Image (cartoon, rainbow, N blue to C red; front, side, top):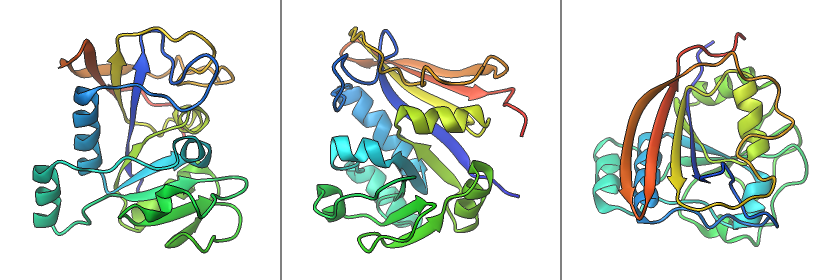
Length: 215
């Protein structure tokens, strides 16, 4: 069963938070973070995002840099990666700006299809669900959050790479990028692939999992 390459891409605070202590949409990352995010999107065939995260942000990230769009065009790929929304409950409101963005939208859920989406994939266990996406051409995926979705895939040992933009601020609170209810993840070992400054005090950290959790 072939699985996609899965890269978790996040901007986090110095204390490992995704959002302010009071909650709400995160406003992390400056121009450097935006640039490496677009590079990750350009690499990907699709991106996974939790429905709760989309409700907060109301739209998803797009590739804007002309050279990245030109490269995807030359490769015969869609200009934007397919966005796969993961939802175990209610769907998304069709009035969200997300549904007006120039991209293809799939719903990954155990429930019925939703008319506003271009396609629907049944959500079962994570390994089988990701294999379905790979079988439909999504062989490289970026995972954009939220924390519960990231934690679930980390716990299954299905995340091969972490791309973290470390932002120079402290947020406090409980909104970390790994859920406090996460199981023991200490069996996973991470090898540093890259670290470089992004400007504005931000630092890019990329890691590859060298000892994933057993299936």
